[in-house]
Length: 127
Image (cartoon, rainbow, N blue to C red):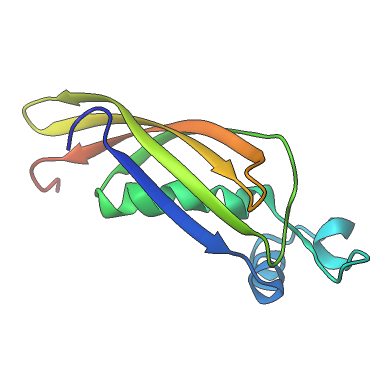
């Protein structure tokens, strides 16, 4: 793991995904429960923001900070691609501090969101 390492996660969110998130979150904002003219729902921004956490989980990062800005909606059946770049890494005796930046694009190559996350990888098991 080094600065500049890049990861990519692709996902198509389905109506079932959004319906489950509505149930879990309680967010019943009309765009998330009402089909548009193309038969799609708007995917919750926080649901799209789970994409960078997939890489954080693979790297065993315990999250400390997460910031995201949304620019365009994502719709069910859109294919979104999240590009994550490790921006800063600080190795310490018992942990490693990791900061990454990310951008999420739809299938039309339009940026729908971006942000960063910071977390820790513990080098020894904590009690």
